[in-house]
Image: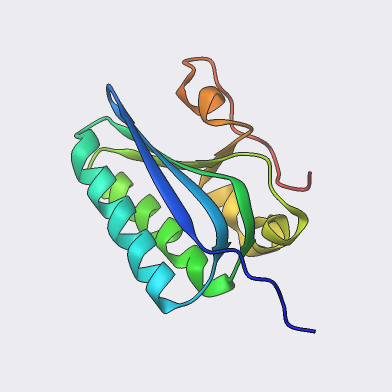
Length: 131
């Protein structure tokens, strides 16, 4: 039986001082890696200094380990240029395994329960991704 793959989709929502990158489907393969890296890079430029780019993962059903690279690159690029990058959303079990404690993501990239929590002045990052 062949595996059912969900096509990767991305939608961008821009607001004052932020850019929300809403991903859906399976985040896998070199073309998706390249597209994701380009989208996040463009958003980091658009938000300007002090701005926030949020990678929303709620509708992502699967992510390959290689496709987590754009998140790490975005975190470094944001920090080097006076911007912020974070991840948000409720994770599927397979995505949680790739971004969980063993991967180092909770310590490297802030992760919020939702995009709204990331945008809230009092918003606190999630302590871990085990849920």
